[in-house]
Length: 456
Image (cartoon, rainbow, N blue to C red; front, side):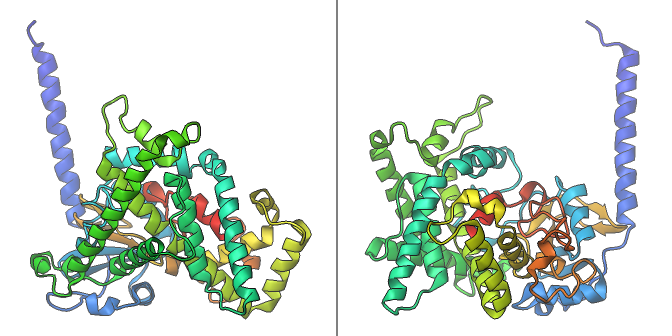
């Protein structure tokens, strides 16, 4: 059948117009200025201006250069969003474009070369992992199904704290919280408590998770100067590779034990059981063994320390403000009483306690700077040109302390989130950019619901 010449001509014309328009738009964007920002220094750029407390220093720079700021950090260009409108422009208007992640050297080994959920690019495998996590673990219905596990583990934690207190021994709140949260994850993932009060295996696990968290948070010069990354001048990459080898060996053993005990779980499948049952989709997408290990690694690192840090901050602020503490205690006594333990069904009635937790998230977010986003293509935001291959940081810490949104932003005041307060209309689930402790857009924290419940 011969091709209609008129149809061919029309198709060619449409293609030509598309290419011309695309080229015109690119030229138009290239004429736009970069966002304002510090000039920095030769070679190293603005790295010395960022320093150790990056969130605070970037917030200070934003007061001079504005809420959309561009910096050269070593070899990389980085744009920083420091207020709600700027965050909305990137994470809502250009959400799909900035849904990718850069490839930091320090994360390659522990994420199994970015085969995980946290640092992977926005691709079909990531979408599948996210979907399975939501369906079987972190979504509302699935999360409610694991309530008995949480009740049992938090009961153990309270009894342990009471036992220490009766012996006049110190209760290190972050330690007991991390143990409880890790055990909850262990039971949900592989039907096994991974931390005991004592024991060699427990201490190994604690040490590895701590090394992963501290190593991943360290400044790694190789991340900013890829040409010399192979030298590993600080030894961080060697340390992270060693941690990865230890953690991988432990995961391998854990998964082998899990497979061997499969018959014991008949009728009571855990998350890994459900994941392996659904690892191949109808369209041929596959979740590999490496994906499973990388996902478990993500869940243990992101699902323990971050929640513990926020609870510690909330407790510290209440101890500094006895009036707030007494009000929270009075509400708990009225709703729960003193003759039973708190149940998750009580939480909707504890409105002031919820306000305390939200205020802790506003003032002390566990991730003051969002995990970096990445765009492979050039784009325009607010009349500025954002070059291709740019990193994006959203300063969650600065957004939560914006005086235009939060009067007296440095004051810990849970009444902000009580009916009638300026924060009562803001929900932390990612739709209100004035309050985004869990991020927003496609890469919002998948464990946001778990984070709120575990805090309470």
